[in-house]
Length: 243
Image (cartoon, rainbow, N blue to C red):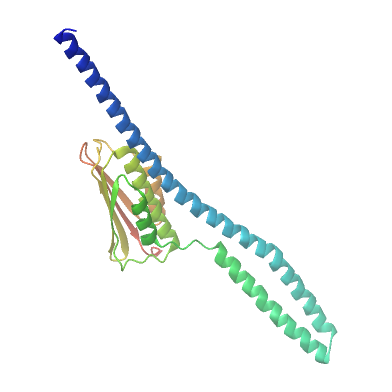
């Protein structure tokens, strides 16, 4: 084989290896993205499953125990008017116990139907340890408490959307999430070192984030430049705005 033919064969081999290496890299990158999205989806599904189970239990308690105790209370009321002396005293005592049980059932049902309390910091820390790419750098002050479940849920959904977008679109190596408290507001500043974009187009995810925040008196601003990453700035009141 001539030296020219050998060189040509070597070049083809090199090109083939480069293509294979590039394809393998893209496959691994896509696998990491898919894994990250799966982890976020699993968390959402688990939370939805817990909420559905709580609602199912609350309906069972309300429909079974609640109705039976209410019917028993009516029967005891009638019995109280038909009895006298010691018997009437026992009926009244049973009526008091029944009222207490009915109140306890209603309290449990109300608690179960309430919004799930979210430990935002703990949930975010769990996300940061399970997502491998991009590497998430979380800053969350220890004195930031969100007692309103709806607002905590909203901030969690926004953070999840930011992480998902960074995994799916940014091709970022790092993502920084910084939560702060600014007076009576909670703020989230997020930015990555991904490819960015010269024009921000708000798809369903970003639009949903804006609408969700707006309903609670909050706001969001998106900033990006091509090859300079993507930035999101969120502000949300900690309390319901005064009418």
